[in-house]
Image (tube, rainbow, N blue to C red; front, side):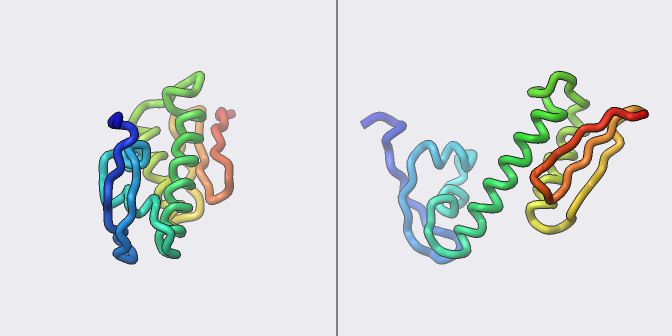
Amino acid sequence: MGRDRELYDGSCGFCGQVVQYGMETLSEANMDQGLAAKLVCDCTEAGIFQMRHKNIQRGIQKVEGIAGKDSGKPMKEEVVSYLRHAVKDIANNNMQKITVQASGIEKVTVAATKKVSRFPGR
């Protein structure tokens, strides 16, 4: 059996149910077994966690596409890192929207909608 087909056991941090997951899930969880178990458990709390986790991942991908290395004109890593953290705070309902003036001519807005926007200044 190849390493990619190995199964691992873990316990959901929400309900305690023992679940199995593969290397793909473990990789998605950055090798964190507790996180991997939460990503595959079928309890209600894990389902809410999984939705929030997916929203964070999608938001971070959008930030990378707009301002990160994947964009045509990347911003400083400090700004991109700040925006990644803002995505997490928005997904966790700590804030609804943030606008960062990244330079004298550009700003980036991250909001609880499905959009991440980058605006050139005047």
